[in-house]
Length: 434
Image 1 (cartoon, rainbow, N blue to C red):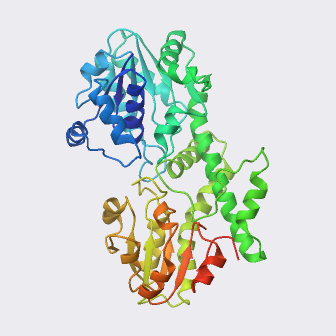
Image 2 (spheres, rainbow, N blue to C red):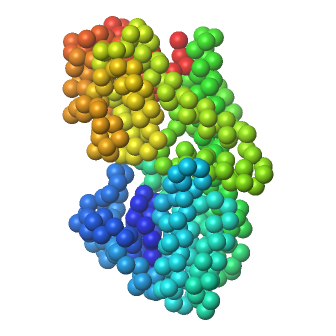
Image 3 (tube, rainbow, N blue to C red):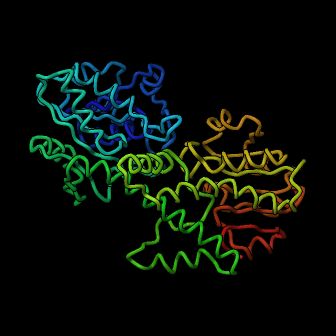
């Protein structure tokens, strides 16, 4: 099938490359000429394991190409995916849908023959209705259907998630659109990936509800971690004990500094605003958002306590800046709040992240960026693990002890065992364990 993917961000590029790998003809469109030129040279705009090779292989095979103008790709397409950004709108927290509607207006001008227009972007309930109205208003003669097909891709594992999904949600009641979507995802259907067909508004809400529930699990276990510290329990064992219950499950029960990234913060906020506008406020989700915001800065207080409560003039080595490993995404990363709070307290911050430092420099300009964990640790009074990159899981504590001012580790991801760190001669602070 012929696919036009509007947007070459995280969702659009990964989805387009995977569809091409299924054998479809895909054109990824983006107004950013520099980004398109880089993609044509094989330079990826994001870090995602395996993406560079996937794109290169499909470009070489002639199934994947890139363009800055959408008229021809849309005119030739069986399905046009809208995969543009929907960031939180400045000032009120609602999802900013301006890019979605702008894409819809441009798509309308180029439709030719029956076309399925698919919202892949994460959008509030009712957005598909407005996209349909925008296109119909511009092109009353057009033969099209608007479908909701939310993405469920985890950064760092996006290709695997696309090719081996838990489910594929398709929101449409149009029989022809359903046939097109079934054909697009046929390789996955043959592998027994479940296709869930729903009404369009239901599909839109599924995405927000899923992210809010996962964010709630993270926030729940973080609060349990605080309780564990006060009563002398071990949050990792609590998480294992409750996670073995099939009704709960073990995923997203890892205590830490709070959630961040491109999805959970903006999607929980947008869901809260949608519910408030509908007159049915979601108190649980509102609390999740509030607790998560407070938690990030609270982690800085753990670091300050490890410095004996006297932070001014001291140095902290921060390992990990991205919101999770295997990505370069700094959006709403806990590191932003933690580093800022440390700097506010008079701490000098040295940092290293395997992929995120280029983006971090613009957001945290006063940090000294280093070439590795040991360079960051030189002369530091405390070592802080914020992101659980594999490169930080087997640090040489004997070496660290010789280069740091004092041997202190604050492990905000609980990747080390307290006894092992103590044997190395370090004071150890973790989350939810004593």
